Amino acid sequence: RAGLPENAPPENAPDVALRWQSIFASREVLAMAGSYFTYGYAAYIYFTWFFIYLSSVRGMDLKTSAYYGMLPFIAMALGSPLGGWLSDALTKRFGKRAGRCVFAAAAMALSGCFISLSLAAKNAQLASLILAGGAGALYLAQSSFWSVTADLAGGSAGSVSGVMNMGGQLGGAVTAWLTPLIATHFGWPASFLTASALCLAGAAGWLLVDPAANLKNVN
Image 1 (cartoon, rainbow, N blue to C red):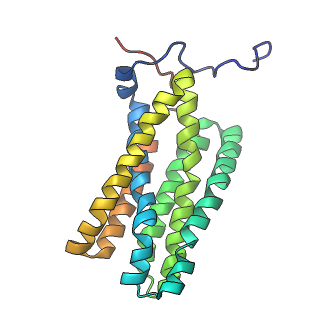
Image 2 (image 1 turned 30 degrees about the horizontal axis):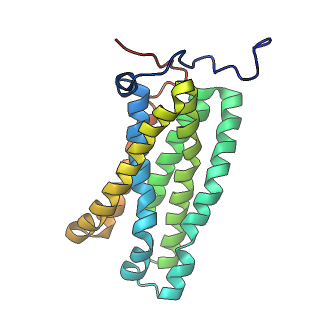
């Protein structure tokens, strides 16, 4: 890349602004939006229902649940920069496919495993720690979503990342409604197993993404 200006766009960036129909026709965009839907579904369980789960289902008192309720968010705060650093390091050594896509898939699969494993914990404190591990593992994947959309879309990164983020917010909306519904009819373990299964589905979605794809307008 010698001789190129410092603000040159990425090599695979589209030359012109992408039309909406081209964005929604992209396998990569749809796969990441679908994966981010599952990401948002799992993440918003922690935002909306985790504290209630600890107090009402696991039987923690108000003070104890307040302390343990912080753990997933501490794990998220640590997982976000750690995931970005690991993704960059792996990308530099093995390429974008491994550093972005495979890494994100592994992180989301690990999160799903943690969420499922928490159901086997008889102790409420231990269950909280395992679920916090699930939150941290989930957030290891977050940077891959945003870095790959920027790489794919170039000057249209705002539009493409907006579509992807829409998927995440829809996932959050669905979990706010569906989680208590599943818990009421099938029990709380079924609610968490649903989130776990969706994490695994989101991990599989990453295997459909080619981070070197060149998004182009379709006729």
